[in-house]
Length: 115
Length: 116
Image (cartoon, rainbow over all chains, first blue to last red; front, side, top):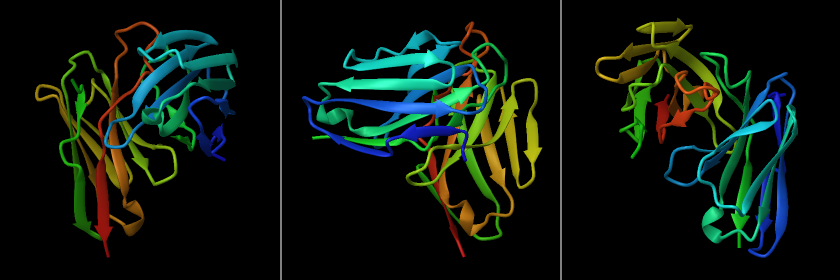
């Protein structure tokens, strides 16, 4: 039990499909994050939610649409993706965005392949 | 331009010896630094951290050193164990930007191989 659970673990989708990634955390945290890890690149922060409010959108294309219905759940809705969007998508949570010196806890990731 | 750099993509050490992983950063507003370990097909796992008010933090086999003037930190693992073969990521955050204390900027990682 990692505390942060992501589903599905693997996803293959066509460029015209619509799919959603789900993340759930059981740690009582109030901040949740989406990161993207592409080959040969560092983890890139995509979106940040603090207390269900989006506080950061790191210039992510609109074909990625996050949703945070409550502090425990985070979704990433995907539509009309491109093959270059194939990557490992990681969800993370932390206590909140205002507490100093806080670490983030990661889920196991969703390996996305766009064909 | 990368704000957190891990210039060694890979490192190989003998079991039982010391592993030293290095990380440099460019943003002087960073005040919290973390090391994560990642196995294939898993998410990163938090290892150890250090705030900018310290220059050393130790936790079991892991010690992190911070040199603020050089904007450099290092992770020492003693002794290295075969189960420690993984990718190690350095990350940094800043408390100066309101509400963003948890936003982590990562390096590209260093793949550590521990040989028996």
